[in-house]
Length: 471
Image 1 (cartoon, helix red, strand yellow):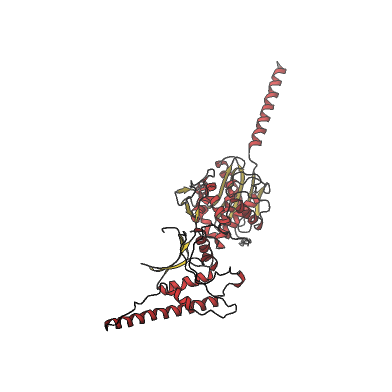
Image 2 (cartoon, one colour):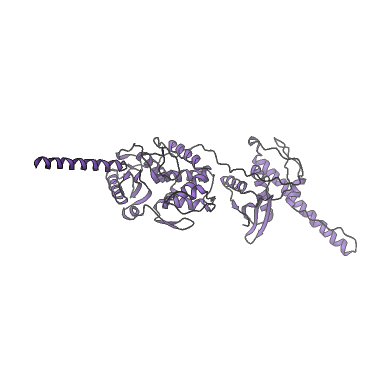
C-alpha cells in the first residue's frame, strides 16, 4: 500500500514537472529595459539584448522611416496613396482598406500609430519605397544608422516572419529617437482616439494612457510568438522615463509590469539631469521613381526637333531661369500691346467704311512670346523648345495655387516648367480664372508624371496639388 502511494506521488510529480515545462516552453521569452529618456542612461535591464519577435513594435520604425521621407520631401502628409491588393489583404488588426482605394498619408500614419493597422503599415511602406521588401531593407538600414545593431526587419507591420527580430534595448532606442527626432508627430501616440480617414479608431495603448500618471505613448505589440510587448514613455515634471517589455502574458499583466518598471525608473532617475538628445541619423536614400506606364504614341505637331534628355549637371542656373522668364515676360507685354493697337486701328478703319482684316489674337500669349525670344548666350547656350501637344489620354493635372494676376500665374508656370523640364516637358500650361484668383495648372499628365512632379516641387517648398480626371 505504501509502495503504491509513493508510486502515485512520483507519477504526479512527473506530470506536474512536465506540465510546468510545457507551459514555460509555450510562453514567449521575457525581456525588459528601463532608461532615463533625457540622458539615455540604463536604469534596469533584463535580457535586453536577446533577439525576440517585436510584433507591432515594428510600426515604430515604419513610422520613423515615413517621417524621415516626409522630412526629405519624398512625399507629404497630403500625398494620396493607392492601396494595393497586398496591403488590403493584410491580417488584422487593420483599418479595412480596399484595393484601389486612395487615402492620404496622414490617415495611414494615424491608423498605424493608434490602431496599429497592418494594412496601413504596408501601404506606407509601398508609398515610401515602392514595395514592402524594399521598405523593409530601408527600415533595417535605418536601424543600423540609429545604433540598433541587433535588429532586422522583414516587413512593415510586425507579423511573425523568419528573421524579423529585435531586442528590448533596440526598441527602447527607437522610442527615444521618435520622441526627440520628431516631436511634431509624437502626440499621435498619446491620442486615445483619432479619425483615420475612413473611420474613428481607438488607441491599443489607451488603458495605460488612462491609468498611469504622465503616460504619453508609445506603442503596443502582440503575436503568439512575441507575447504582449510594449514600449511606454511617461513624463513627470522634468523627468521622462521609457520602459520596454517583451513577452508579457496578457495585456493586463504587461501593463502592470510596465507600470512597475516606470515607477522604478522615476525612483532611480535623478530629479535634475541635462537633456542630451540623440543625434538624428542622415541615412542616404534613393527616392522612388514611379513606374513608367507605356502609352500608344500620339502624333503631335512640333515646332522644332526633339530636345535631347538634359544632363543633370547642365541644368539651367537660377540666373538663367530668371533671365528667360523676364525676357518672355517682356514679350508677353509687347504681344498684348500689339494686339490692342491693331484692334484699335481696325475699329477706326471700320468706322471709316474701309475693308478690315480681322485681328487674330494669339492663342497663347506666353507661347507667342517664347517663340520670339532670342536664345540666351550665357555659359552654355541653350534653346528653349516648345511643342504643341494634346493630352494623349493623360488626364491628370497639378495645381500650383491661385495668384492675384494672370501674368503672375503665367510667369510661375513658365519658371516651374524650366525647373522641372524632366517631368513637365510634355505638360500643357493652363491658367484658370477662379473666384479666389488666377489658378496656375499643368494639365495633360499621366498619374505617375503628375505625382513625381508634385513630389519634386514640394521638396523645393512649392505648393502643389495632384488632381485626377474630372477634378
